[in-house]
Image (cartoon, rainbow, N blue to C red; front, side, top):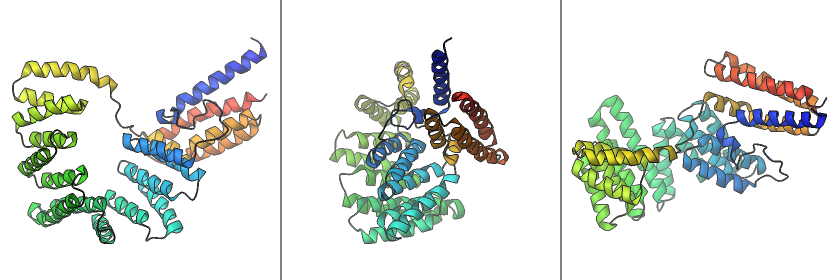
Amino acid sequence: MLRGERIAMTQVVFWGFLLAALPAWAASPDSTAMTTPVEVGPTARQSIEIGDERMKQGNYLGAAFQYQRAVETDPSNIDAYLKLGSAYTQMGQSYQVYFSKAESTYARVASMKGRNDTGYRKGIADLALAQWNVDNAVAIYQKLTVDFPESCSYMVMLANSQRMKGLQVQETEGRDAAMAELDEAEKSARKAMALCPDSIEPVEMLAAVMDTRKSYGEVVALYESMLKKSPGRVEFLRGYAIATFNARDWEKAGQALGELLQKDPRFEERMTYIAVLKKLNRLEEAEAQKRIALKEQPLLQGPVQLTQEDILKEKIGLQKDIEQGVKLIEDKKCDDAVTLWKGTRTRIEAYLQDPEFKDAASDLLVWLDSRILYAQGACK
């Protein structure tokens, strides 16, 4: 094999290893995976827009990555910091280590805008609620509704925090004690409905409060009234279908789900429809729906599930180190790349004693060692 061919083959193998080790979101077109060299990266606004899409998909890790890029591109971008804090808050509900990252991100906002900044206050309230510091969340949301009495969204947030306060009280003091808190939540939800009568969020919140009370009949009546005002509206029809299912009214649930699937077919609701058809002993229809579901299922893509390896990569900044090392190799500075990646290795080694991350750390060390070996011979 000629020397040029050997170098080209080595590069192909290296890039294959690199891409195989990165998480799926990092290899997507909007990531910084170096599939092709670029001179100018995305703007902060572009990164934020991509992050917003990731948030809608439930890919909070991917969203955080994009928002982090945005603040690195524009360190004064408050919106990017707030969205980064929100992504960390969502991730913290699965992995509590991210709550501290959310706190530090919001602290950065406070240092730039002050603790009276509206975005900061909302972010801290969201974080408190996610951590079940419900009293703190209720207090902050209440103050926001006073400061912004025409805000439908803040009133919905207050209702939700009051509903969660009811759940908290129910766990410690019983259902009867929780009713007062749930009554307050209902009042807030109804105020929100008055502020924005055409919005679905206050209706869903009121339904959630009623559902927490296990007042399933009231939820059904609520969505029936909304459908009379807006016949065929998908959001209300979906709520009605869920409400009738929870109320065990199989006839109404079957009719609502059948209509809903014609308007906006979703796999989860088709599976619910199959269960209802079986309850109604409409077995042939259930089998027909099952065949449709089997065709739909492979097309579905749910939210990205974080692994411990994904989390560790983010914690140690592996993505950035790998990209910087690749650039050094391309510039014929292989010794510098080796030094960089050995430093990365040291940071990974620190997690070998952590029961939560030791397996992920071990796997990453094996992968990184092969990269170091490659860098040691790449410039020779």
